[in-house]
Image (cartoon, rainbow, N blue to C red):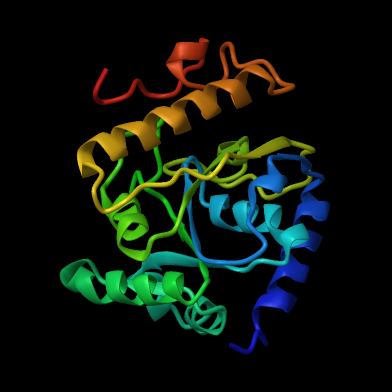
Length: 233
């Protein structure tokens, strides 16, 4: 399909990261397959996670089609951009159509970006995940590539003011090794495996993060931060 919108949007995003002075550290880019479909299962700590995860794939020259709520597509400004980049609208009252659209894209060799937690985690830990990513991977016969974004919550996250000024915030994006599930695998056990992998990756990213977490509003309680405790704790 023609990519008339995606390239200039990427260019704008790169300029925006430069304006903010972000210190990007990206690891695991060798885990991105050169061809074929795959699902990027991304943790969700801030509103810029999708753009940052997409930035990490620029060297591989793969575009990510994100599954995003219908309300974004209805926006007069964001809507045309989302459609132009061939992202997938998710109408929660009719979710089957978006599932079918994502399945078709995966089988056509596209990358689909999904936030398995559904919404931003205000505790900045990995919440319980939904089964959509696993079911799509099984149905399309494609791998799931876990992705961890850390630091984006310091710029713009749920329930807190945006900090869209030059700040030189460190941002880490870690791309994990592909995980393969088959139609014969148990969905619930596969969800547990995916979540466990994402938790391990998050902890490793946090351990190597250049800024200390103790006493910080953007850090989880587990690391001495003051973010809200996970609801399932």
